[in-house]
Image (cartoon, rainbow over all chains, first blue to last red):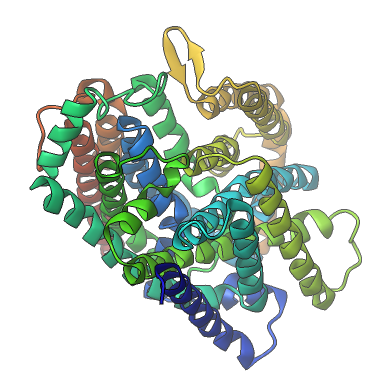
Length: 494
Length: 65
């Protein structure tokens, strides 16, 4: 059999078996909307750990990090920094959010915002923004799967047909199973990808350059300064990395799908326990970068799509079946997070946009059909974005981060600061999102400011925060009466 | 929040974000990594240690109650 037949065959075998495993819990009984999305709210410690981890190790970590290492060099290292910081924030934030979710039957991030601010319009606004910025994340997963299929076909399939195949695979995978299916397949994918990435990350540098240090010395000789900031870029300098670390570490738990997952944890201690050990898992992000750096020295020609670096170097130095195994595990690393993202995005759309506006009187059992329809719609939009507005995987994630980080003042100050008001939250969020759109569409990301290059999301976040605090202070009279009535209610409940 | 917990919370942020200007160099290569990469990896371990102590303090508090 030829190399491309072997590698594509292995990939499809992986995907089909994962879909079958995913199908089993779904076959047992018909699930209602809540069970389908939040897994019935009773995941234990270990299963929950795998769901959280499975989501973090996505196409971004595996292909995006190696692609950036290959083409950008030093700035890639920011990826090592933000996760651990985010878990510290999560340690305090998630145990606070989770009990509220259980107590009031909340399922999504806009539900939480509606609960905090008692405002339906603010929650609707947040839902629209959430859906908008989950789309580049979804595009990232689809593009990743497209890249894997393209490389594994050894040039037999072009980008567009590869993307179409990716689309069909993702849509049917999600359409057929829910979150519980995702959890059981995440275990399989985590183990496989971990072995593959660690092996290549160590084998390639040691086999070809004697040691990791040897490889980095060779890069420094060939391209002086590539491994520091701004590396292979013009403006991703020290200030960009610092501002990006702020945006990404604060934005990490602001992704709407993370809120849904923290509602599925059985008790707050599970979330605290996860937060303590998850930083160590971040070390694994180093290995795909090592593969990217090795690819820089080992590949004879410059890749047109740098995100192909990982797959291309495996293709050049290993037989077809090895590429197939990596491709298969990688395909799952794209599909499982895509499934989870799609589920959360369609939940947001159905529950917080559709049910609150034009579909007000839809009965709950009919709603699951709407969810499935929305799933197809969203995947199609992501497919169109991937074909017509292609971008590097890391850039796609950074765009999403700039958008969702704007929820941080709203949710955190809403939970911890008594003077936060509805109007403050609304104006802060509006200012932040307008700035993100304007700066990114105006090609001003990063924004040159006083000799620095600041991440657009960071600039927007600062303005968002300032507006939020000022407007809240001006309008806080309204809220002090609101908290009084809240306290009265609590007293009367007792 | 106690002062100790506050300091433990802030240390990883200062290390990983605040110190980037001082860590932005290729040499010395530590554990086979360019210095900047080594700095971030060390930050991961530091975050784990700080969180572990915070978690320990919190579970002790719970038992006392």
